[in-house]
Amino acid sequence: MSFDLILFGGTGDLAWRKLMPALFRAFRKGRLPADGRILAVARDEHGDESYRAWLQKRFDDGVSDRLPHQDAFTRFLALLQYRRMDLSQTDDYQQLHVWVDGRPGGAASTVVHYLATSPHLFPMVCQQLGASGLNGPRVRIVLEKPLGHDLASAQAINRAVQAVFSEQQALRIDHYLGKSAVQNLMALRFGNALFEPLWRRESIANIQITLAEDLGVGTRGDFYDRTGALRDMIQNHALQLLTMIAMEPPSSNNADAIRNEKLKVLHALRPFTAESVARDVVRGQYKAGTVDGAKVPGYLEEINVPADSRCETFVALRAEVLNWRWAGVPFYLRTGKRLAARDAQIVVNFRPVPHPIFPGSHTPNKLVIKLQPEDGLELHLLAAKGSGTTDALAPVFLDLDFDRAFPADRIGAYERLLLDAIAARLNLFVRSDEQEQAWRWVEPILAAWQADEAGPRPYGAGTWGPPAASALVARDGFVWGEEQ
Ligand code: BG6
Image (tube, rainbow, N blue to C red; front, side, top):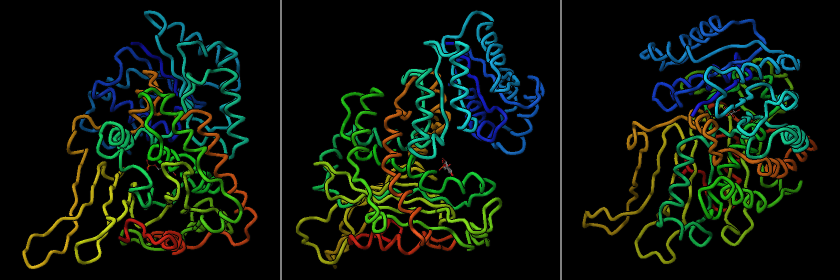
Protein backbone atom coordinates (compact mmCIF):
# COMPACT_ATOMS: atom_id res chain seq x y z
CA MET A 1 0.00 0.00 0.00
CA SER A 2 1.32 3.46 -0.84
CA PHE A 3 0.37 6.59 1.02
CA ASP A 4 0.89 10.33 1.08
CA LEU A 5 0.48 11.91 4.50
CA ILE A 6 0.12 15.68 4.38
CA LEU A 7 0.63 17.24 7.75
CA PHE A 8 -0.87 20.71 7.99
CA GLY A 9 0.69 22.51 10.95
CA GLY A 10 3.99 20.72 10.26
CA THR A 11 6.05 23.05 12.46
CA GLY A 12 3.55 23.18 15.33
CA ASP A 13 3.92 21.68 18.78
CA LEU A 14 1.63 18.75 18.09
CA ALA A 15 3.61 17.84 14.98
CA TRP A 16 7.02 17.62 16.59
CA ARG A 17 6.00 16.56 20.09
CA LYS A 18 3.52 13.81 19.20
CA LEU A 19 3.02 13.10 15.51
CA MET A 20 6.58 12.94 14.23
CA PRO A 21 7.79 10.83 17.17
CA ALA A 22 4.83 8.49 16.59
CA LEU A 23 5.56 8.24 12.88
CA PHE A 24 9.23 7.65 13.59
CA ARG A 25 8.42 4.89 16.06
CA ALA A 26 6.08 3.24 13.52
CA PHE A 27 8.80 3.53 10.89
CA ARG A 28 11.50 2.15 13.17
CA LYS A 29 9.36 -0.83 14.14
CA GLY A 30 8.49 -1.53 10.50
CA ARG A 31 4.81 -0.77 11.05
CA LEU A 32 4.60 2.17 8.66
CA PRO A 33 3.70 0.96 5.14
CA ALA A 34 6.90 1.06 3.14
CA ASP A 35 5.85 3.15 0.18
CA GLY A 36 5.02 6.39 1.94
CA ARG A 37 5.72 10.09 1.62
CA ILE A 38 5.18 12.58 4.41
CA LEU A 39 4.74 16.22 3.52
CA ALA A 40 4.88 18.80 6.29
CA VAL A 41 3.04 21.99 5.46
CA ALA A 42 3.30 25.29 7.32
CA ARG A 43 3.89 29.00 6.80
CA ASP A 44 7.54 28.97 7.85
CA GLU A 45 10.29 29.40 5.28
CA HIS A 46 11.91 25.99 4.92
CA GLY A 47 13.10 23.71 2.19
CA ASP A 48 13.13 19.92 2.63
CA GLU A 49 16.66 19.96 4.03
CA SER A 50 16.19 22.82 6.46
CA TYR A 51 12.93 21.29 7.69
CA ARG A 52 14.68 17.98 8.34
CA ALA A 53 17.45 19.81 10.20
CA TRP A 54 14.85 21.72 12.20
CA LEU A 55 13.10 18.48 13.14
CA GLN A 56 16.37 16.77 14.00
CA LYS A 57 17.09 19.63 16.41
CA ARG A 58 13.65 19.30 17.99
CA PHE A 59 14.22 15.58 18.48
CA ASP A 60 17.71 16.20 19.86
CA ASP A 61 16.26 18.56 22.43
CA GLY A 62 13.22 16.69 23.49
CA VAL A 63 12.41 13.26 22.06
CA SER A 64 14.17 10.64 24.10
CA ASP A 65 13.97 7.51 21.98
CA ARG A 66 15.73 8.90 18.92
CA LEU A 67 19.28 8.85 20.24
CA PRO A 68 19.93 5.10 20.11
CA HIS A 69 18.38 4.98 16.64
CA GLN A 70 20.08 7.75 14.65
CA ASP A 71 20.50 5.56 11.56
CA ALA A 72 16.82 4.79 11.44
CA PHE A 73 16.06 8.44 12.12
CA THR A 74 18.18 9.53 9.16
CA ARG A 75 16.25 7.12 6.93
CA PHE A 76 13.00 8.40 8.38
CA LEU A 77 13.99 12.00 7.63
CA ALA A 78 14.46 11.02 4.00
CA LEU A 79 10.69 10.32 3.79
CA LEU A 80 9.91 13.87 4.82
CA GLN A 81 9.35 16.77 2.52
CA TYR A 82 8.34 20.31 3.35
CA ARG A 83 6.16 22.81 1.56
CA ARG A 84 5.41 26.38 2.53
CA MET A 85 1.70 27.12 2.11
CA ASP A 86 -0.57 30.05 2.78
CA LEU A 87 -3.72 28.14 3.69
CA SER A 88 -5.96 30.90 2.35
CA GLN A 89 -4.43 30.78 -1.16
CA THR A 90 -6.12 28.62 -3.80
CA ASP A 91 -2.92 28.55 -5.86
CA ASP A 92 -1.07 26.87 -3.03
CA TYR A 93 -3.61 24.03 -2.97
CA GLN A 94 -3.33 23.63 -6.71
CA GLN A 95 0.41 23.27 -6.28
CA LEU A 96 -0.27 20.70 -3.60
CA HIS A 97 -2.47 18.82 -6.04
CA VAL A 98 0.39 18.82 -8.53
CA TRP A 99 2.64 17.34 -5.81
CA VAL A 100 0.09 14.61 -5.07
CA ASP A 101 -0.44 13.75 -8.73
CA GLY A 102 3.25 13.93 -9.56
CA ARG A 103 4.22 11.10 -7.24
CA PRO A 104 7.03 9.09 -8.79
CA GLY A 105 5.62 5.70 -9.78
CA GLY A 106 1.98 6.90 -9.87
CA ALA A 107 -0.60 8.25 -7.44
CA ALA A 108 -0.64 6.86 -3.90
CA SER A 109 -3.44 4.48 -2.98
CA THR A 110 -4.19 6.65 0.06
CA VAL A 111 -3.86 10.35 0.73
CA VAL A 112 -4.32 11.52 4.32
CA HIS A 113 -4.63 15.21 5.17
CA TYR A 114 -3.86 15.62 8.86
CA LEU A 115 -5.07 18.98 10.20
CA ALA A 116 -2.84 19.71 13.16
CA THR A 117 -3.57 23.42 12.86
CA SER A 118 -5.74 25.73 14.89
CA PRO A 119 -9.35 24.52 14.46
CA HIS A 120 -10.53 27.91 13.24
CA LEU A 121 -8.72 27.07 9.99
CA PHE A 122 -10.53 23.74 9.49
CA PRO A 123 -13.51 25.11 7.50
CA MET A 124 -11.26 27.11 5.19
CA VAL A 125 -8.80 24.26 4.62
CA CYS A 126 -11.64 21.82 3.88
CA GLN A 127 -13.28 24.20 1.48
CA GLN A 128 -9.98 24.81 -0.34
CA LEU A 129 -9.15 21.10 -0.47
CA GLY A 130 -12.57 20.46 -2.00
CA ALA A 131 -12.21 23.31 -4.49
CA SER A 132 -8.88 21.94 -5.70
CA GLY A 133 -10.17 18.38 -5.99
CA LEU A 134 -8.09 17.04 -3.12
CA ASN A 135 -11.08 15.19 -1.64
CA GLY A 136 -11.46 12.18 -3.94
CA PRO A 137 -12.42 8.69 -2.74
CA ARG A 138 -8.86 7.69 -1.80
CA VAL A 139 -8.48 10.78 0.39
CA ARG A 140 -9.12 11.02 4.13
CA ILE A 141 -8.94 13.95 6.50
CA VAL A 142 -7.89 13.75 10.14
CA LEU A 143 -9.11 16.46 12.50
CA GLU A 144 -7.43 17.20 15.79
CA LYS A 145 -9.24 18.45 18.83
CA PRO A 146 -10.50 20.89 20.00
CA LEU A 147 -13.36 20.34 17.57
CA GLY A 148 -15.39 23.37 18.49
CA HIS A 149 -15.96 25.33 21.63
CA ASP A 150 -19.62 24.44 22.00
CA LEU A 151 -22.34 22.66 20.03
CA ALA A 152 -22.84 25.47 17.50
CA SER A 153 -19.14 25.79 16.65
CA ALA A 154 -18.73 22.00 16.48
CA GLN A 155 -21.69 21.82 14.10
CA ALA A 156 -20.22 24.61 11.97
CA ILE A 157 -16.96 22.66 11.64
CA ASN A 158 -18.85 19.47 10.86
CA ARG A 159 -20.91 21.21 8.17
CA ALA A 160 -17.76 22.57 6.54
CA VAL A 161 -16.12 19.13 6.63
CA GLN A 162 -19.23 17.33 5.41
CA ALA A 163 -19.63 19.71 2.48
CA VAL A 164 -16.38 18.29 1.12
CA PHE A 165 -15.77 14.87 2.72
CA SER A 166 -18.08 11.95 3.51
CA GLU A 167 -18.37 10.75 7.12
CA GLN A 168 -16.21 7.75 6.18
CA GLN A 169 -13.46 10.10 5.04
CA ALA A 170 -13.46 12.35 8.13
CA LEU A 171 -11.52 10.97 11.09
CA ARG A 172 -11.93 12.87 14.34
CA ILE A 173 -9.13 12.16 16.78
CA ASP A 174 -9.65 11.54 20.45
CA HIS A 175 -6.21 10.33 21.40
CA TYR A 176 -7.57 8.55 24.49
CA LEU A 177 -9.21 6.05 22.13
CA GLY A 178 -5.74 5.23 20.81
CA LYS A 179 -4.45 4.21 24.23
CA SER A 180 -3.85 0.48 24.52
CA ALA A 181 -5.90 0.30 27.70
CA VAL A 182 -8.98 1.44 25.83
CA GLN A 183 -8.60 -1.31 23.27
CA ASN A 184 -8.08 -3.71 26.12
CA LEU A 185 -11.33 -2.52 27.61
CA MET A 186 -13.08 -3.68 24.44
CA ALA A 187 -11.19 -6.98 24.64
CA LEU A 188 -12.05 -7.38 28.31
CA ARG A 189 -15.73 -6.76 27.78
CA PHE A 190 -16.36 -8.46 24.46
CA GLY A 191 -13.57 -11.04 24.18
CA ASN A 192 -14.26 -12.68 27.54
CA ALA A 193 -17.41 -14.31 28.83
CA LEU A 194 -16.49 -13.67 32.44
CA PHE A 195 -17.46 -10.07 32.99
CA GLU A 196 -20.43 -9.43 30.74
CA PRO A 197 -23.03 -11.15 32.99
CA LEU A 198 -21.85 -8.95 35.88
CA TRP A 199 -21.62 -5.76 33.82
CA ARG A 200 -24.90 -4.28 34.97
CA ARG A 201 -26.79 -2.60 37.77
CA GLU A 202 -27.48 -5.83 39.63
CA SER A 203 -23.76 -6.35 40.29
CA ILE A 204 -22.14 -2.94 39.97
CA ALA A 205 -22.50 -0.25 42.63
CA ASN A 206 -20.74 2.62 40.86
CA ILE A 207 -18.14 3.41 38.23
CA GLN A 208 -15.43 6.03 38.59
CA ILE A 209 -13.43 7.50 35.75
CA THR A 210 -10.43 9.56 36.85
CA LEU A 211 -8.13 11.42 34.45
CA ALA A 212 -5.71 13.12 36.80
CA GLU A 213 -2.65 15.10 35.84
CA ASP A 214 0.06 16.37 38.17
CA LEU A 215 1.24 19.01 35.69
CA GLY A 216 -0.22 22.50 35.53
CA VAL A 217 -1.18 24.34 32.36
CA GLY A 218 2.47 25.15 31.61
CA THR A 219 2.85 27.42 28.61
CA ARG A 220 -0.69 26.76 27.35
CA GLY A 221 -2.36 29.28 29.67
CA ASP A 222 -3.85 31.28 26.84
CA PHE A 223 -5.51 28.29 25.19
CA TYR A 224 -6.46 26.67 28.46
CA ASP A 225 -8.10 29.75 29.87
CA ARG A 226 -10.48 29.84 26.91
CA THR A 227 -11.15 26.14 27.29
CA GLY A 228 -11.21 24.79 30.86
CA ALA A 229 -11.27 21.21 32.08
CA LEU A 230 -14.84 20.47 31.02
CA ARG A 231 -14.17 21.21 27.37
CA ASP A 232 -10.57 19.99 27.43
CA MET A 233 -11.08 16.57 29.03
CA ILE A 234 -14.68 15.74 29.95
CA GLN A 235 -16.56 16.52 26.71
CA ASN A 236 -14.22 14.24 24.79
CA HIS A 237 -11.83 11.89 26.62
CA ALA A 238 -13.88 11.14 29.74
CA LEU A 239 -17.17 10.79 27.87
CA GLN A 240 -15.58 8.52 25.28
CA LEU A 241 -14.35 6.27 28.08
CA LEU A 242 -17.79 6.30 29.64
CA THR A 243 -19.36 5.15 26.37
CA MET A 244 -16.86 2.30 26.07
CA ILE A 245 -17.68 1.15 29.59
CA ALA A 246 -21.44 1.50 29.30
CA MET A 247 -22.19 0.50 25.70
CA GLU A 248 -24.13 -2.62 24.76
CA PRO A 249 -22.17 -5.36 22.97
CA PRO A 250 -21.90 -4.27 19.32
CA SER A 251 -22.98 -6.77 16.70
CA SER A 252 -19.50 -6.71 15.15
CA ASN A 253 -16.12 -5.09 15.46
CA ASN A 254 -17.06 -2.75 12.67
CA ALA A 255 -16.63 1.00 13.20
CA ASP A 256 -20.27 1.94 12.80
CA ALA A 257 -21.54 -0.99 14.87
CA ILE A 258 -19.37 0.31 17.71
CA ARG A 259 -20.13 3.96 17.17
CA ASN A 260 -23.88 3.33 17.04
CA GLU A 261 -23.71 1.72 20.48
CA LYS A 262 -21.57 4.53 21.88
CA LEU A 263 -24.01 7.10 20.55
CA LYS A 264 -26.90 5.32 22.31
CA VAL A 265 -25.07 5.73 25.61
CA LEU A 266 -24.60 9.45 25.03
CA HIS A 267 -28.32 9.76 24.28
CA ALA A 268 -29.14 7.86 27.46
CA LEU A 269 -27.17 10.19 29.75
CA ARG A 270 -29.48 12.05 32.12
CA PRO A 271 -29.54 15.67 30.88
CA PHE A 272 -28.35 18.33 33.30
CA THR A 273 -30.53 21.16 34.58
CA ALA A 274 -29.37 24.23 36.51
CA GLU A 275 -30.40 22.43 39.74
CA SER A 276 -28.60 19.22 38.96
CA VAL A 277 -25.46 21.10 37.91
CA ALA A 278 -25.42 22.81 41.31
CA ARG A 279 -25.85 19.43 43.01
CA ASP A 280 -23.89 17.02 40.83
CA VAL A 281 -21.02 19.00 39.32
CA VAL A 282 -18.03 20.38 41.20
CA ARG A 283 -15.57 22.73 39.53
CA GLY A 284 -12.26 23.77 41.01
CA GLN A 285 -9.17 25.86 40.33
CA TYR A 286 -5.72 25.07 41.71
CA LYS A 287 -3.94 27.34 44.11
CA ALA A 288 -0.21 27.27 44.89
CA GLY A 289 0.90 24.04 46.52
CA THR A 290 3.47 21.28 46.50
CA VAL A 291 3.78 18.58 43.86
CA ASP A 292 6.46 15.91 44.21
CA GLY A 293 8.16 17.92 46.94
CA ALA A 294 8.43 21.06 44.78
CA LYS A 295 6.49 24.28 45.31
CA VAL A 296 4.34 25.17 42.31
CA PRO A 297 2.32 28.31 41.54
CA GLY A 298 -1.44 28.53 41.49
CA TYR A 299 -3.40 28.71 38.25
CA LEU A 300 -3.82 32.49 38.50
CA GLU A 301 -0.03 32.90 38.62
CA GLU A 302 0.53 30.88 35.44
CA ILE A 303 1.81 32.58 32.25
CA ASN A 304 -0.95 34.13 30.09
CA VAL A 305 -3.71 33.53 32.63
CA PRO A 306 -5.75 36.61 33.62
CA ALA A 307 -5.47 37.40 37.33
CA ASP A 308 -9.25 37.21 37.77
CA SER A 309 -9.81 34.06 35.69
CA ARG A 310 -12.74 31.85 36.64
CA CYS A 311 -11.56 29.02 34.42
CA GLU A 312 -11.95 25.57 35.96
CA THR A 313 -8.88 23.34 36.15
CA PHE A 314 -10.81 20.56 37.86
CA VAL A 315 -14.22 18.96 37.33
CA ALA A 316 -15.93 16.13 39.15
CA LEU A 317 -19.45 15.14 38.24
CA ARG A 318 -22.05 12.50 38.77
CA ALA A 319 -23.68 11.11 35.65
CA GLU A 320 -26.36 8.50 35.11
CA VAL A 321 -27.09 6.32 32.10
CA LEU A 322 -30.84 5.93 31.90
CA ASN A 323 -31.42 2.46 30.53
CA TRP A 324 -32.21 -1.02 31.84
CA ARG A 325 -28.59 -1.98 32.26
CA TRP A 326 -27.46 1.05 34.24
CA ALA A 327 -30.46 2.76 35.89
CA GLY A 328 -29.46 3.91 39.38
CA VAL A 329 -25.71 3.28 38.96
CA PRO A 330 -23.73 6.51 39.42
CA PHE A 331 -20.90 7.18 36.98
CA TYR A 332 -18.45 9.60 38.59
CA LEU A 333 -16.16 11.46 36.22
CA ARG A 334 -13.23 13.46 37.48
CA THR A 335 -10.34 15.30 35.86
CA GLY A 336 -7.93 18.01 36.88
CA LYS A 337 -4.55 19.64 36.51
CA ARG A 338 -2.04 19.78 39.36
CA LEU A 339 -3.59 16.88 41.20
CA ALA A 340 -1.72 14.54 43.53
CA ALA A 341 -0.56 12.19 40.76
CA ARG A 342 -0.65 11.50 37.05
CA ASP A 343 -3.14 8.73 37.07
CA ALA A 344 -5.80 7.77 34.56
CA GLN A 345 -8.01 4.88 35.53
CA ILE A 346 -11.50 3.49 35.56
CA VAL A 347 -12.69 1.79 38.71
CA VAL A 348 -15.67 -0.54 38.54
CA ASN A 349 -16.92 -1.04 42.09
CA PHE A 350 -19.02 -4.17 42.52
CA ARG A 351 -21.79 -4.55 45.06
CA PRO A 352 -21.12 -6.34 48.34
CA VAL A 353 -22.20 -9.97 48.66
CA PRO A 354 -25.94 -10.19 49.43
CA HIS A 355 -25.47 -12.00 52.74
CA PRO A 356 -22.10 -11.75 54.51
CA ILE A 357 -21.04 -14.82 56.50
CA PHE A 358 -17.47 -13.73 57.33
CA PRO A 359 -16.69 -11.42 60.24
CA GLY A 360 -15.50 -7.86 59.72
CA SER A 361 -16.29 -5.28 57.11
CA HIS A 362 -14.76 -5.68 53.68
CA THR A 363 -14.32 -3.57 50.60
CA PRO A 364 -16.37 -5.31 47.90
CA ASN A 365 -14.70 -6.52 44.71
CA LYS A 366 -13.46 -3.96 42.29
CA LEU A 367 -11.91 -3.95 38.87
CA VAL A 368 -9.38 -1.22 38.16
CA ILE A 369 -8.66 -0.53 34.52
CA LYS A 370 -5.38 1.38 34.49
CA LEU A 371 -4.81 3.64 31.50
CA GLN A 372 -1.64 5.40 32.64
CA PRO A 373 1.05 5.64 33.77
CA GLU A 374 0.75 1.82 33.69
CA ASP A 375 -1.43 -0.04 31.24
CA GLY A 376 -3.06 -2.87 33.12
CA LEU A 377 -5.89 -4.39 35.08
CA GLU A 378 -6.29 -5.09 38.75
CA LEU A 379 -9.04 -7.34 40.02
CA HIS A 380 -9.52 -6.90 43.75
CA LEU A 381 -10.85 -9.96 45.51
CA LEU A 382 -11.16 -11.24 49.07
CA ALA A 383 -9.38 -14.34 50.30
CA ALA A 384 -8.95 -16.31 53.52
CA LYS A 385 -5.53 -15.69 55.00
CA GLY A 386 -5.53 -19.25 56.27
CA SER A 387 -3.71 -18.49 59.52
CA GLY A 388 -6.12 -20.75 61.36
CA THR A 389 -6.75 -18.28 64.16
CA THR A 390 -9.39 -16.22 62.40
CA ASP A 391 -11.86 -16.63 59.59
CA ALA A 392 -11.60 -12.96 58.62
CA LEU A 393 -11.01 -12.20 54.97
CA ALA A 394 -8.08 -10.26 53.56
CA PRO A 395 -7.94 -8.25 50.33
CA VAL A 396 -5.82 -9.66 47.50
CA PHE A 397 -5.62 -8.66 43.89
CA LEU A 398 -4.82 -10.06 40.50
CA ASP A 399 -2.52 -7.68 38.72
CA LEU A 400 -2.16 -7.80 34.95
CA ASP A 401 0.56 -5.61 33.51
CA PHE A 402 0.11 -5.41 29.74
CA ASP A 403 3.39 -3.60 29.19
CA ARG A 404 5.11 -6.65 30.66
CA ALA A 405 2.80 -9.20 29.06
CA PHE A 406 3.24 -7.88 25.51
CA PRO A 407 6.49 -5.87 25.57
CA ALA A 408 7.19 -6.08 21.83
CA ASP A 409 3.74 -5.05 20.70
CA ARG A 410 3.18 -1.91 22.73
CA ILE A 411 2.05 0.96 20.59
CA GLY A 412 1.47 4.59 21.55
CA ALA A 413 -1.86 6.32 21.07
CA TYR A 414 -0.79 8.60 18.23
CA GLU A 415 1.11 5.83 16.50
CA ARG A 416 -1.97 3.62 16.59
CA LEU A 417 -4.26 6.37 15.33
CA LEU A 418 -1.92 7.47 12.55
CA LEU A 419 -1.54 3.90 11.32
CA ASP A 420 -5.31 3.44 11.51
CA ALA A 421 -5.87 6.65 9.54
CA ILE A 422 -3.51 5.46 6.82
CA ALA A 423 -5.17 2.03 6.73
CA ALA A 424 -8.74 3.45 6.94
CA ARG A 425 -9.61 1.60 10.15
CA LEU A 426 -12.24 3.86 11.66
CA ASN A 427 -13.09 2.08 14.94
CA LEU A 428 -11.09 4.45 17.10
CA PHE A 429 -12.26 7.71 15.56
CA VAL A 430 -15.22 9.72 16.74
CA ARG A 431 -18.23 10.16 14.48
CA SER A 432 -19.76 13.63 14.15
CA ASP A 433 -23.04 12.63 15.81
CA GLU A 434 -21.21 11.30 18.88
CA GLN A 435 -19.19 14.45 19.16
CA GLU A 436 -22.24 16.71 18.79
CA GLN A 437 -24.24 14.73 21.33
CA ALA A 438 -21.38 15.05 23.81
CA TRP A 439 -21.50 18.82 23.34
CA ARG A 440 -25.28 18.79 23.82
CA TRP A 441 -24.77 17.03 27.15
CA VAL A 442 -22.11 19.39 28.55
CA GLU A 443 -23.70 22.63 27.37
CA PRO A 444 -26.15 23.00 30.31
CA ILE A 445 -23.14 22.77 32.63
CA LEU A 446 -21.40 25.59 30.79
CA ALA A 447 -24.60 27.66 30.87
CA ALA A 448 -25.17 27.07 34.59
CA TRP A 449 -21.59 28.05 35.40
CA GLN A 450 -21.90 31.22 33.43
CA ALA A 451 -24.91 32.23 35.49
CA ASP A 452 -23.28 31.21 38.77
CA GLU A 453 -21.46 33.95 40.65
CA ALA A 454 -19.63 31.52 42.91
CA GLY A 455 -16.92 30.46 40.42
CA PRO A 456 -14.63 27.46 40.83
CA ARG A 457 -13.71 26.14 44.26
CA PRO A 458 -10.06 26.47 45.27
CA TYR A 459 -7.91 23.38 45.78
CA GLY A 460 -4.26 23.10 46.69
CA ALA A 461 -1.89 21.92 43.95
CA GLY A 462 -0.85 18.37 44.80
CA THR A 463 -4.22 17.36 46.29
CA TRP A 464 -7.14 15.41 44.81
CA GLY A 465 -9.23 18.54 44.20
CA PRO A 466 -11.74 20.46 46.30
CA PRO A 467 -13.28 18.61 49.26
CA ALA A 468 -16.67 19.02 47.57
CA ALA A 469 -15.57 16.34 45.08
CA SER A 470 -15.29 13.82 47.90
CA ALA A 471 -18.63 15.00 49.30
CA LEU A 472 -20.25 14.39 45.90
CA VAL A 473 -19.38 10.70 46.10
CA ALA A 474 -19.86 10.40 49.87
CA ARG A 475 -23.46 11.55 49.46
CA ASP A 476 -24.19 8.23 47.75
CA GLY A 477 -22.25 6.30 50.40
CA PHE A 478 -19.07 5.84 48.28
CA VAL A 479 -15.49 7.10 48.24
CA TRP A 480 -13.02 7.77 45.41
CA GLY A 481 -10.56 5.01 44.58
CA GLU A 482 -7.58 6.56 46.36
CA GLU A 483 -9.57 6.92 49.58
CA GLN A 484 -10.57 3.25 49.76
C1 BG6 B 1 -5.23 16.77 25.85
C2 BG6 B 1 -5.53 18.00 26.66
O1 BG6 B 1 -6.33 16.45 25.03
O2 BG6 B 1 -4.97 15.67 26.73
C3 BG6 B 1 -4.39 18.32 27.62
O3 BG6 B 1 -5.74 19.11 25.80
C4 BG6 B 1 -4.06 17.11 28.46
O4 BG6 B 1 -4.72 19.42 28.46
C5 BG6 B 1 -3.86 15.88 27.58
O5 BG6 B 1 -2.89 17.39 29.19
C6 BG6 B 1 -3.70 14.65 28.42
O6 BG6 B 1 -3.33 13.58 27.61
P1 BG6 B 1 -2.49 12.36 28.20
O7 BG6 B 1 -2.46 11.39 27.09
O8 BG6 B 1 -1.16 12.91 28.56
O9 BG6 B 1 -3.26 11.90 29.40
